[in-house]
Image 1 (cartoon, one colour):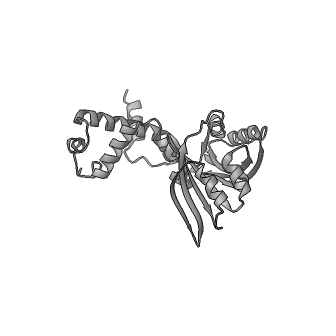
Image 2 (image 1 turned 60 degrees about the horizontal axis):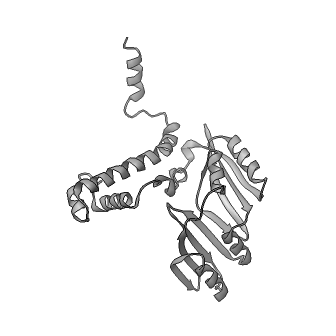
Length: 244
């Protein structure tokens, strides 16, 4: 079985696209996180004061540098509603969105991976109904050649985790809890926080459960084409079926 990767660009009413149209040397890369958008804005040209002012209005500036190599800015802003968005359309056609979205010279560039070529055709046909669209590439790729990072957008992996669950997971990871042997216990981790051990463990277990659940669809995709059976599961099932 093959997967299908499609790259295309569209013209749509979007402040980032409009900004890239007014400043052709600008490239804007857009990522969706759990509750915010992160933009990386680059240009090889020295920015004007007007451009810097417009960038300031896009969100909180986390980093800005202007030197001989040009402009580099990273901003963060509240996540705009995705209701009736192009991202929702990808999902409705069983297509995996591959971030980031790239805005350049008045176009929004997207890449998706689908399990069925018909899903890609249906998606492109729907998008063509209400916006300018140009297909840049559409290729079939064997599953064993798909980089695993393509299949697991970060925002999807951490979907539905609360701030405390994310914090517990990060604390455990950085403290060495997942090393073999473990470098720290949940009691020691809880002592570095303001919550009881039982509460900390509850946040950590829920985080682990949600993370593995979210990763499940990508795990199944990664292993679908493999003929290896390292634990002899298929053999055991066959034996169970003939036991009678």
